[in-house]
Amino acid sequence: MTSSDSESGGSGEPGEPGEPGEPGGSGGSDARRVRVIAELNMAGRDSSAASVAFHTAGAARMGLGATETKTLDLLERLGPLTAKELAERSGLAPASVTGLVDRLEAKGFVRRLKHPTDRRRVLVEVNPAKFAEVAPLYEDWGREVAELYEEFDTDELEVVLRFLKGATRRQREAARRLQQP
Image (tube, rainbow, N blue to C red; front, side, top):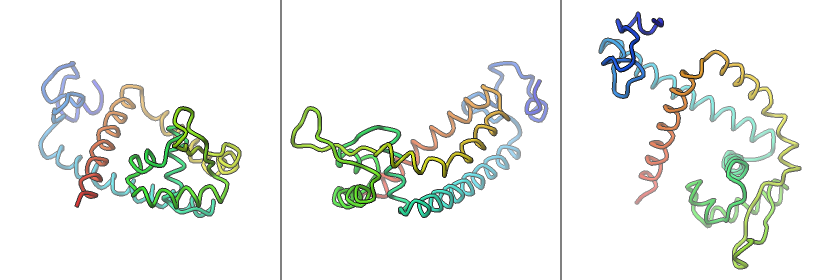
């Protein structure tokens, strides 16, 4: 039995109603659940503020704005994209993306390539050499996150992953709703 089992009174047997890992299970008393949800909400807000501060500081060190660094992140994770795809994935207006790509290209962070199958379209990709120049800014953070992962077993990491994916999906949906007239 884990410490969370003893706190919630559960036996730790899979499938027990109210088991912490069971979707919709309370994992304990209603008061405890209310407290944990409140703490999660506060921790999420605090994490969001820390993330904004971190990315703002990193962007400033690179001579970029936050939107520019998040665009680079999209391109680094997803590979070359068209301006239309960048607009769709970032939530920016297509006209804004054109200026954004112009700025990133002028600073050497991206380059435009001919689309391999459609001569009318252009792809935008990260300039790997320039990206490598700024990678050291994030190395210590990467090490700290790797150390944090070691504090959790694989089952716990899977729960965190499920939560983050669900929260991200819902936040993207909320952002789309906010962008609608």
